[in-house]
Image (cartoon, rainbow, N blue to C red; front, side, top):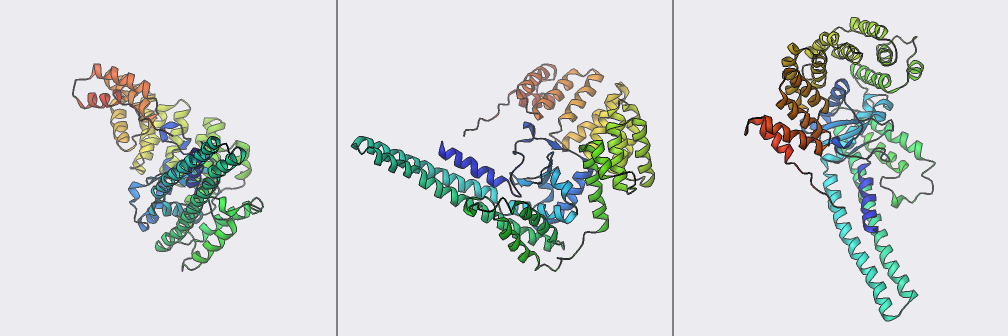
Length: 459
């Protein structure tokens, strides 16, 4: 239906806050390709916390979610999460550039733009339905009176013209929101004593990339302001900040470079890593990228030697110990992975992803004496990481090692539920109920899963 297509178009437009959406937003349990990493997530929390506070938002209530996509993009789809592509993190050469993007997205959340957009689209849908009914009515009336072709043309015009007007009106509304988010982002950056130059550099790059393709495009059918006009308006506002020429702290720039090196090491082919970080480059980020690439594609002995060399430089860096534990674990040496992962967890006590990996290493030994510790660690992790599918699976195996089949079934049901496999989750939960004392906390959890039915959503 034309009305449905128009609403779908505007929905997509409202979600792509930086550029054309390269990943369709879906619930986390629907298969969205996410990246979870304790080091990168901590860095992004450090980036966003002052911005969110300046925006009047609770940092604990807004999460930055990393999408495994090399395109440069970021967007919001609710008031609780900012989605950012790995490509945006990697291509941002300074912290200030990605912080500017995050400030823009915080502007959308603080402005309540999604809720307002939903209301605008609901109003538009009503208008489109009325326009459709009027157009159809005109054609039917023409047919009844024998007006023929002229009546048909009038009816089609009545169908198409209002839809186009409403579509342009909605797109104009979206463009206004983008401009508001730009201004809000600059405001938040200024309030936190940060430059908006990186934000301007990012949008200027987009303007340069789209300058040729934007020629001849009708600006009134775009979901974002035209590139050159947007950059010009943003620069006028950004240059009024007393922090325009302020640089990122050296320590923050170093952490940013380590993040980019980590992404390259995990996501790029070895030859690509070697070109970007040649052996002649002895910087810590370059050595980090090469060590990660070595563990993924080379022999484990060489990889561990490179990681140990990193640890020798920074013995209290939790993420170097984490990397060593991960390399050993994924090469079938879970028992050896326990010590470096314990060290990593002690150096980064709130890094639940590291603790989850420690639990996995304990379970991987298939030694019942480690099961109790693994269960305690994983249960605590899952209090904070309720959608960590692998955490529930490891917990199920730990219970299985102890012979506690009731709790193993319940953890398996929770793993299936978190991954979106509701049918399997209900079956496992029903079996868990038969093994758990009726009315116990575990039985109640199993009953919630066994009786769960996802809500049906209409178009």
